[in-house]
Amino acid sequence: MYDNFAFTIHHRSSENQARLGQLLTPHGVVETPAFIFCATKAAIKGVSVDDMKASRTQIILSNTYHLMIQPGPEIIQKLGGLHRFMGWDRPLLTDSGGFQIFSLGQGSVADEIKGKRSHGRSKTLLKITEEGATFRSYLDGSVQLLTPERSIAIQQSLGSDLVVVLDECTPFHVDKEYTERSMQMSHRWAQRSLEEFKRRDEGKQALYGIVQGGVYEDLRLESCDFVNNQAFFGQAIGGSLGADKSQMQEIVRLTSAQLSREKPTHLLGIGGIGDILSGVAEGIDTFDCVHPTRLARHGGALVRPPHLPDGKSGDHINLLNGIFRGDEQAIESDCFCGVCQKYSRGYLHHLLKARELLGYQLISIHNVAFMNRLMQAIRHAIRNNTFKRECKNWLAEQSRRSLGTCATICEVA
Image (cartoon, rainbow, N blue to C red):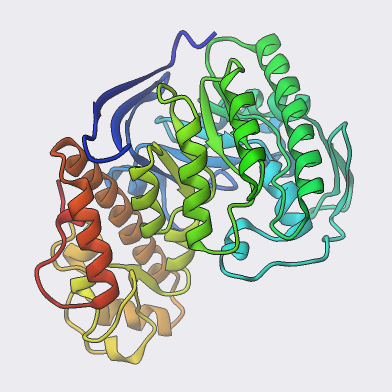
């Protein structure tokens, strides 16, 4: 069923569960661990596909929910499929629309981790039943029904390489009884997704299953068993991951340990630097998140700790801040991206203050390059069996800002 796809593990770390792999698709190979950038509506906000390629991007993601609303899968299929539609000839993943079922009704996973949970369902989501999710289009108010079968059909029309089963991403604040019912329904949806995928299979796509179960260990283990026993090419960790970073990492650790070590494992919707480092150590192969480009649209440029102003911690600088007004430095003086090679922080600060769109575009390009550089360095460290030490150095320096030698985890490999 997956003759045109393969996942090969070339090196396993002797320190933890980190591994180096190659994910083969009809549109090329993805070296893992890798970061998947979100082209939600068939576009990376503010960044062209040529800029994405120049920044060494391997794979991107588009959203089934948004593309079914506009322009519609029929239009994209008529215009040659999502790759041709976007002008992107490298690997591409589409999600199922299940995350939107969650976010429309309860708020996002990111909001949960940040403590911004919403306790009321949006009026856009009308109901979730065994058949599927019924919601009102944000574009024209029409009532839409997204079923497992329709999600797979839409993803086939889009023509992405990697596709995902439909699931309900349960929120944190619901009780165990609701979480278990939701998980069992998601399992039935996954089986329906798989059957529809088999019926439509043309050898051009590979299907991922999703582990649910919320914050409950026994449910997570049950969901892992379900996914392990289905004919999925890959596996993804989804759903509520807890109330804080610590609980999220524990759930990822628990879940990844129970999943097949021979299949590619994806962590849905998580992409903070610390989260990536801890996830890689647990055997996660791919990550996706809007964070790098969303941060750029607020003036945030990702940097390693030595490039932060004195006394500051974190993973980025806010170029809207007045301290950068006359700053002659690049965002990062040793970054390979064209933005850092050509423009100063002072110029980028000016663009932001003047509300010139170019400013947001340039910072987005840097942030994309930063994430690709980070993943390249992670792969290099795993290969050399130094990942554990360098990861520890990065996190320690990020927290204490000791302005000493830069942790090499984010050096260009």
